[in-house]
Image 1 (cartoon, helix red, strand yellow):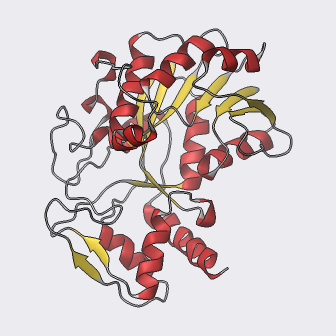
Image 2 (spheres, rainbow, N blue to C red):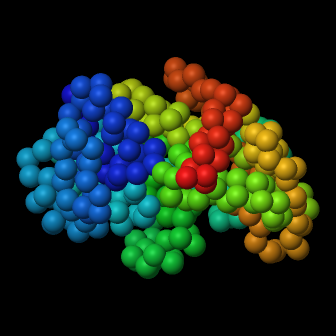
Length: 310
C-alpha cells in the first residue's frame, strides 16, 4: 500500500494506525473535523463525514489504495462513505465492534455458553434491514444503540458494495493510559488501588479483549490483505471482571473489593450478565497470529497506574 486514508485516527489506537503507516513509508491522509491535528508528515483533510458534499469537495482528487474507517457508527454515515469513496479506493476497512454480538441488543443473536465465542456468520449483515430514518443524528440515540448502529452500518456497506469491504469486529480494547478516552481501565485501576468496591453481577461472564497495539496492527494487516467480509479481532484468553481486577491487584495494590448489584441494575464496565465472546479462528486461518491477553495486559495496567500518578 502506498496511499491510505484514515477516517478518524486522531486518538487512541487510531493514532497508532496512522503512525505505523507513516513510519512504514505510506502516504497517510487523516480525515476528521479538525478537532486535533495529525502527526507531522501526515496529510490532513478537514471535513464533517456526515456532510456528503463537503466531504467530497474536501477530498478533491485524492484516491487511496485502502481506506480505514475508524468512526463509522450509523447506516447514514456508511451510505455517505459508500457514495463518496466508491471511485476513490479498491478496499474499504470499517472498524466494527464485538457489540454486534450482544444478545441484549438484538433478538437475532441467540445466547451461547461461555468459551465457544461467536463466529462471524452469527451476524449476516448482507440480509439485515437498514433503517436510516431513525434518529441516528442524535448522540444519545447513537450511544443507546451503539451495537445496532454498527450492525446497520455494516449492512449498508454489504448490501450494495461499492468497493471490496471488510468489517473488523474488534474486541474490547484495553491500554493507552491517558490516551484511552473511554476511561474503562482507569475506572478499575482507581477502584482497586483505593479499595472502593467494583459493582458486579451475581454471575459474571467472560468476554473478549485485545490490546491497543494489537488492534492497530490488525487493522493495518486487514487493509493490506485480500479477504472480504466480517472478521473478528481478539486476543486469546478471555477475561471476566474479577480476572481483570486480579491482574490489577497483582501489581502491588490491595485485594479488590466487590459489591453485587441487583438483577437489572447497571454494573461496572466489563461486568457482563450474559456471554458474547468472539471466535477468532477466521483471522488466524487467514494468517494473523494473535497474542494472549497475559502478554500485554500487565503492561497496559502498569501504564494506567503510571498515568494516575502523574
